[in-house]
Length: 116
Length: 360
Image 1 (spheres, each protein chain N blue to C red):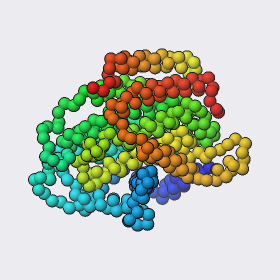
Image 2 (spheres, rainbow over the protein chains, first blue to last red):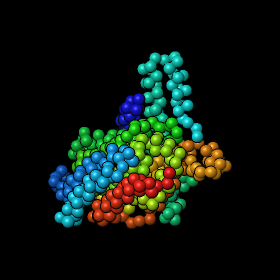
Image 3 (cartoon, each protein chain N blue to C red):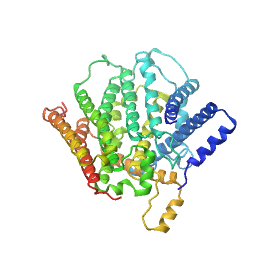
């Protein structure tokens, strides 16, 4: 039941965009000239390639994010049953978190969080 | 408290009485789809008008006041304008990805929108892993933004998309930690159960006292960053990147991003209202019989909307008060301040719950 509702919501989103785009395409004017097909950027003719290697600063954050996101995924089941696990469960998760904080501290120390 | 299940079950039995099962399910799904689109559109219009008016008041301006009384028809005219603009397809863009990006952004925001609990029993998607599901779906939006920036073949768009990606994934960590802390308190991930619990035991922000209040404040900061809104609007910083990742979109294609941005703000406020402020639960005080009776008389969705708009006002206040941060300041704020703080809050909350330092 819940799953069919999820699929309904998903299809509603896709269908909404498809329908409105089709409507806008029907309603809007269409014209062609060679100038119009160039990327706009900031108004002046663009120079050089765009699809190129991009600065590494963002990727470092993405890699760090991966580590913490997977950690969050592991913590969700624990958070739900935390009350029944008691102090033993709390201690093991604190240890888990401690190791992760060490990871963050290492990255911090190595300068991965510094913007270059 | 009025239970919306009565209405849906009545409808279900009514349809089942003269239709086969598959036709009933089909009709119900269509009704649900119509409900989603209607609510989505109505609240988008309300939000855009509210944002403009409130922003104007913060800056001592009047805001839209020409079209219709108090500028009420302005948003409708904008929709009409966007619909009748040409959708330009540039030759140099990556056509497939450029067309696919709005689908991802709008679908992600629509599916998360249908997770919101409007009233007791009036919730479209109610998984028992609701919070987890919400976080998973909401992070699809960032893929759409990255695709939009990459496929546009435009340097400003690319920079905007990269900034947006870095920002959204970073602040998602804080949101995840805050959610974890609140799940420690509630012990369930389903939004309907979280609301029901808050009706019985009191709102989470009061039950969880100090750590919950701190979580709420951090959520307001991270929430604005998640929605790419000021003071964290680096991705579209119009004074340096023209319009960031959606520069190359025209007409309704641009409109989708506009729509999704405002609805994400609404969803962000809705989740805050659900997790911290009780969702549709009325503010009940033990032993105040008269008060409780009056409060229970007000329907749940009214409470929900009141809380959502209260949180929205806080978010708008924040947006129009602080100047824009630089990208390095923004990432510093997350990785060096917010993330350690939210992790510490998670530990504090876990200890509080384990040793019974919460109000039950």
